[in-house]
Image (tube, rainbow, N blue to C red; front, side, top):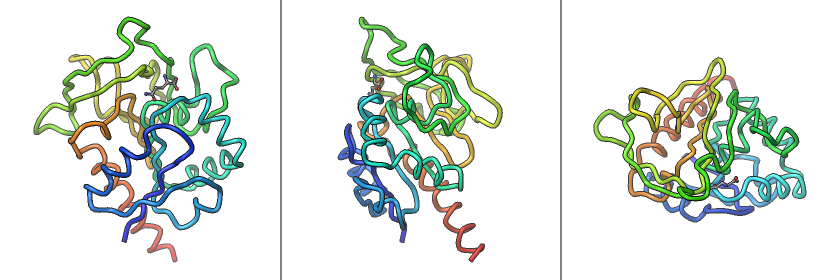
Length: 203
Ligand code: GLN
C-alpha cells in the first residue's frame, strides 16, 4: 500500500489529499518531523513559500526533508512547494528553502494584474488532451539546469516551463489539485511506485 505524506503546515493541503484519495492512495498528514517516517512520497502544497519555509525551520523539518529528498524520496511541490524545492529564487538569495531542484524560480512573476489565471497547456508528457493549468500568484521557472526534464510549458514553442521533473522530484507552478485532472498526480504516483520497488529490492 502506498501512503503519501502531505505537508500540513500551511496552504492547500486538503485539495491535494482529496486528489490523492481519488487517485486511490492513502495520505497521511505531515505536521512534525516524526510524520516523515514511513511515507512513500511527500507533497508540498501551494500557499506562501516564506511562511512555509519559516514553519519548516520552526518545526525542525527542513533538514530532514532535504536529506530524504537527496536519498530519493519522491517529493511533489506545487506553486509555493515548487519555490521551496528550487535551488535559486530570483532576488531572494536568503529565502529559506529546500534547494533540492536545479531550477531558478521568480516569485509572483506574472505581476499584480494577472496574478491569477487559467490556461490550457500542451504537454509532451500528457498527450491525450491539454492540461488545464490554474496559476495563482504563481512563480515562473526562469532557468532549468542539468538533469531537469520539462514536462509541460505555458508557451506553445516549449518556452515557460510550468511542470518539471528531476529524478524523484516533481514541481509545478500551477495547481493540478484544484482541477479534476488526475494525470499530474498519477504521474507523481508512478515516480513513487518506482522508488518503492527499488527501495524494496535494496533490502
Ligand atoms: N506567491 C506564492 C509564494 O510566493 C505562491 C502562490 C501559490 O502557492 N499559489 O509563495
